[in-house]
Image (cartoon, rainbow, N blue to C red; front, side, top):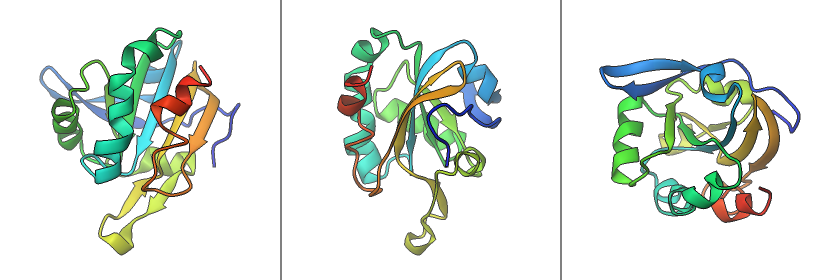
Length: 159
């Protein structure tokens, strides 16, 4: 599992661009930037949609006001689902990074086996602060349905 002080692994995400899906690499997102990265098991799932993401939407200005360049959200969903989720959540200004095959989650060592619930391989729930591609703070939830250690309020205490 990735640890504080480690460099993020190279990965390619999908994001919605003006003409449709485009690829963005780890370097595109994190190089030269201070980014809060939120990992969630799935868009529109109850804890992600009602408990985890809303805190980051509500506290966006405060987080960005503490020297953070961007707030990014990644999930093992396709780019179209993440685009719909960002719009449904009023999350303008947050970057949604589709990790459709769980390649990034696996490379981090933060994948979760949700096959028993019909979800396949997903990402564990976490938040981290990344500076120029290096993990400076990491908060992984022990229980996937909880959004406490990885929530916006907890993250604000370390910024």
